[in-house]
Image 1: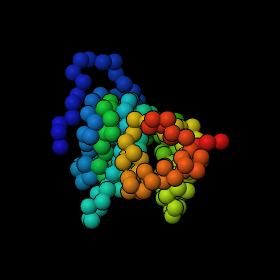
Image 2: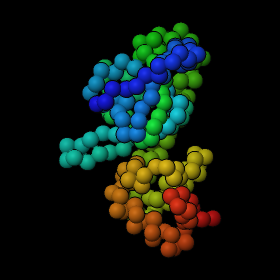
Image 3: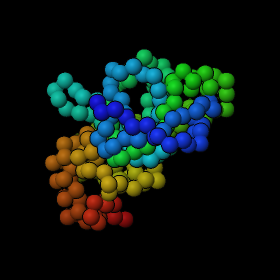
Length: 203
């Protein structure tokens, strides 16, 4: 794994959970923030960019567990684990703040208000992940795509035109070819509109 790039010039301190101080890191597209099985010494906050949490199966397939963006924390479970449980890969050039797991745990233990805020953020991520897991149980690819568009609208998000369709397909639990065909059928049926790489549901 390529070494992560620290920001060289001094910056004002960045405060994280429980008043902890973070250090900035820059990652290129495709670079791993951490790999499954590595010692979990830090948690991370995304300032810019996007990360895909993924796990590789024995048959060679890759499963997307979650896609995280600015404002999200990565590897919160590290507070209760000795190792990371998945890979975290930058989908685009990204910048994160890294915090010591031990310092975060100590800071949250001293600050009940910060602890509750932390739990609220975790609960929001769990709800999104649960919705995606339910979405993957939909058998027909066309219906799964429409449900995904409804989910994005409910979350106040848009289909990100900068995300490769292969990454979206992985998040939906589809092979890329199935997603391409589903988008084509839905467009011909006048259920979605496409402008370049943007996709939206017609009202």
